[in-house]
Image 1 (cartoon, helix red, strand yellow):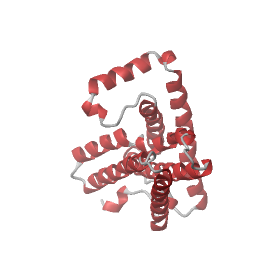
Image 2: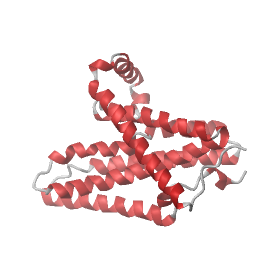
Image 3: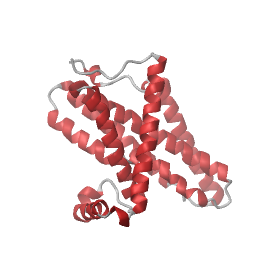
Image 4: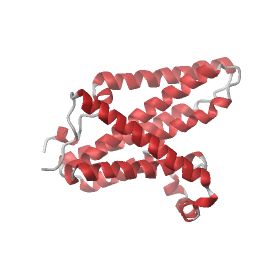
Length: 236
C-alpha cells in the first residue's frame, strides 16, 4: 500500500499548500496581534492564545503519525498509540472557540481588536482540528466503510465537546489523564451520573457538538460540490 493512500484529499482549503499557508498566515497574524496588544497595554494577558494554538497543532501531528504508521503496514501498535494521543488532544483544537469569553477583558483595547485577535486563533485551531479529524476519518473509512467513518466523526465530536466542557468549566487538561487520573475520572463520572447538577456541561456539550458537526459537514459539502477533490477511500 502506498504511503499516500492513507491521506484523504480533504478539505481543499487545508490540503493544498496554499490552504496550509493561509492557516499559517492567520496564525502568525494572530501572534502578531497578541504582541501588539501586549506592547500597548504593558502586559501579556493574552499570551495563552499562543499556547492554545500550539496545543491545537498537536492533534494534526498525531493524526499524521497514525496515518504513516498505518501506511507502513508495520506499525499497528504505534498507530493505536498515536490515535489515542490524537483523541486526548483533539478537544484542544476547537477549544479555542471558547476563548471568546475573554472579550470582556479589554483594558484600553477596542472590542473589535480583541475579537479579530481571538477569531484568528479560533479559526486556525478549528481548521487544524478538522484536518486531523479528516485524516483519522479516512483511516476508519478505508477499513470499515463510510457509515462507520461518519459515525466515528459524530462520536468524536460529542466526546470532544464534553472534553471542551471539562477544560473550560472544570479546568482539566489533556495531560491530567496521566498526572491526576483518579480525580479526573471521578469528576467525569460525577458529571455524567448527575447531569442535572452540571447544566452548563450538558448545554455546552450538546451545543458545541452540533456546531462542530454542522461546520465539519458544511466544509465537506462545499468540497463535494466543487468536485475537485475525491471522497475518503472506502474499503473494497
